[in-house]
Length: 326
Image (cartoon, rainbow, N blue to C red; front, side, top):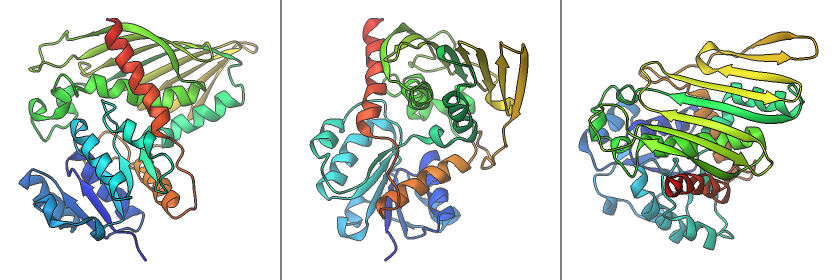
């Protein structure tokens, strides 16, 4: 029997998850959003069934819940999925609402999947392999900077009306733990200590902070500096990893990884295959498709989902520690 899906939240990520399911051969999808324009767009563009009220769908009508709402609504849907024993996938949070419920129900025989999209991203998988093979020797420290101008995130809508411009669910607060999901995987350890600054330095019309400067120490001793901003007029993700025998450098939009090897004083340039973004988006679709494929495989017992809420709790707590220490 084919799985039946219920997607709550039909904004940017909700629509993307519909596309991901379609690519993976799944089309038994019902969607819900509190906004009528988003419901209509999802219905006409993706030919899915829509409900206008949560009362119009019963737990018996679906097998899998995909939670793509804004972060402040995640907790209630998590508890709903747990109460009705539904497999669920959730976008990245900015709070830990629902985490206690997940941990209390850790033995419940359902797949509970927090998003970890960038672990499926081709250059990050390539860098993981290189570092594991000792391409730069022992990793000692790293620098990372992620920047993109906030109004460019969703150019089709007013950024001031979207959750990521609000103080508690801001883009910077969302992106720090989001980036830690793959950075800590790449470096092989979770954050032990973090300090730094969160501030608003631009004239963007919002209460939310727009830049984070953070210094971290990981559990394995690796030191890292991170800058997360939503003020850069040019988008980029830039990583530099300092090792005992070399340096790894990656700028996402250059589509290459550079490895400097100290013993031969030369730099190797490794080309990174380009993916295919959906029209109007920056991020390639392939990693999202692959992420959902593993989630689907986990549901039917063909795979183990590679990331847990217990792991992600450490990343969100790093954000809280940074805020507390300011």
